Length: 103
Image 1: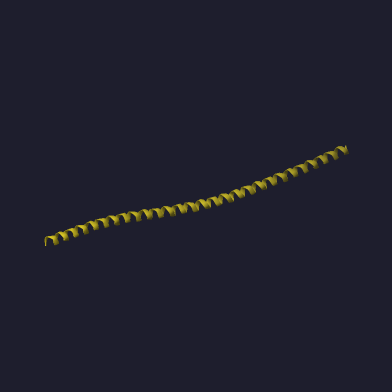
Image 2 (image 1 turned 180 degrees about the vertical axis):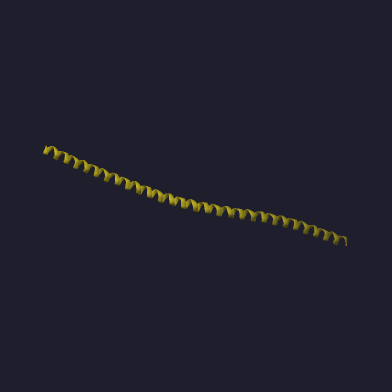
């Protein structure tokens, strides 16, 4: 009978230890799940930041293209103004020369 009692006590003790180990594992699992949830939140945040960065980069490229086009238009306008100035000077010189001849 005593051996049977010892055996029951040993089984009860092993069961208690197993329950403690199980509780420890459950705590570790809960901690791991919390870390996983945090990691997923970080990933979502980084994805959002990356999307905003990509959109800002696209807008920057569009602004760069617009600026390059504006510089090209300014250069064309400068050339046209220079040509108009040269024509005006030639017309003025021709007018002056014709007035000199008349006198």
